[in-house]
Length: 338
Image 1 (cartoon, rainbow, N blue to C red):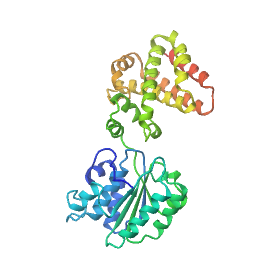
Image 2: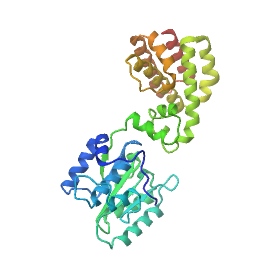
Image 3: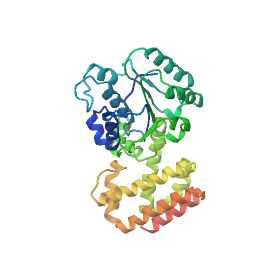
Image 4: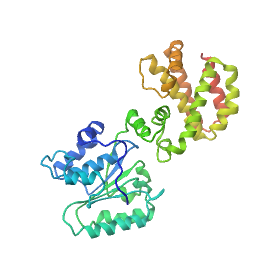
């Protein structure tokens, strides 16, 4: 068990309501009508605000201020919850890559001991999908027969990896995906270069999740190859197939990696389209000058066709088409459409 670590930046109730209006309205009504479930699964992408919402809900239930519509954030109870040292609020985090049975048993023992004290007890399980089968089964009895008034908040990015028996005993609340701005801000807080953060914010969660730092070097190289390859397709086509053979294919070694490479090509062309519409939220912000030149010389009709070709290549990749032939065909189509 560990202190509660807030993902991203700390918010108050009103700020979270702006980000997750449906979730917050649902929780507000449940609290007001005294119909709060005994266990919830908060499901959503990293950065959606699951941790902050768990923290804010706990504060609201335990806040000693007179305003019962939202937690004050300043009373003794709110501050103890915020700093992770409230005696009736416990958290469970993965120990390495999993949450083990011994961790759940330790939490149960601690809650049994604290159950002698009056009042609500709350436990928050972060990355609940990482519980081992034995840990999840150990948690089942705790969900069904708590020793005292208890609220369980199980947070996950992958609800389908959780046991059916756990899912059936908790109310699922799905969080809307975070905005690109918010996702990028989370990566910036990890001291990731802004140009890389802009790409990671657009990629699937597994490329911006717990192993994000391991992926950064790979993404940096991949990004450079996309910039080089687009330059060659449109300005030095005699070089593009050589770059494909000697640099692109050795880097994007399997289908998953090649799919990311196609995503990056897609983002490049979407940036061109964004600049044609005078939008500045770019996946390649430091390449704006090059992108603007492409926007000047590329009609929207041609650009739409190129985007369609890249999407077709992504679909063909899933159909197990040979990677080299797929990329050669795509590059030739992009070049011929110049």
